[in-house]
Image 1 (cartoon, rainbow, N blue to C red):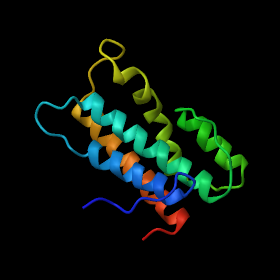
Image 2 (cartoon, rainbow, N blue to C red; image 1 turned 180 degrees about the vertical axis):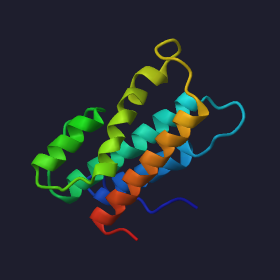
Image 3 (cartoon, one colour; image 1 turned 30 degrees about the vertical axis):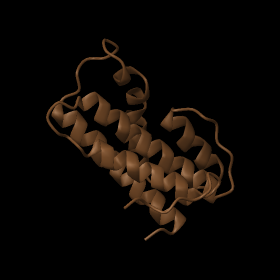
Image 4 (spheres, helix red, strand yellow; image 1 turned 90 degrees about the horizontal axis):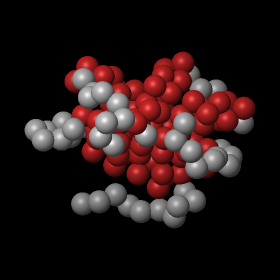
Amino acid sequence: MGRRRYPPTDPREWLNRAKSNLAGAGQATPGVYLEDLCFDAQQAAEKAIKAVFIHRGLHFPYVHDLRRLLQLLNQGGVKVPKYVWRAEVLTPFAFEARYPGHSPPVTRRLYRRAFRIAEAVVQWAERQIGEP
């Protein structure tokens, strides 16, 4: 059964989408490229961060640069913990890892790190928004 849907202006919908991407990122099954899973991890973190923007009534640019988004959140008065800042390493997965030949293959170690970072960002966003 799917999650309850909310309007796109509701941070819970953005968090739902972040959780959906995180679930996809966790599907390391045979035949799936780790690069694709890392892309999902980046998307999970990005949407979770944007959920916090919406929750705080802040506007965000439609960019994939997680460092820039976190800087803007910080400037908007949101205290961003050090472990959430680690999400900036996921930014290249939004571009380079999506297409063949733009980056070297992702190692299992790098994939696990990307997934853990995304998972931590989603959990942080849940706490910011007040989701259980």
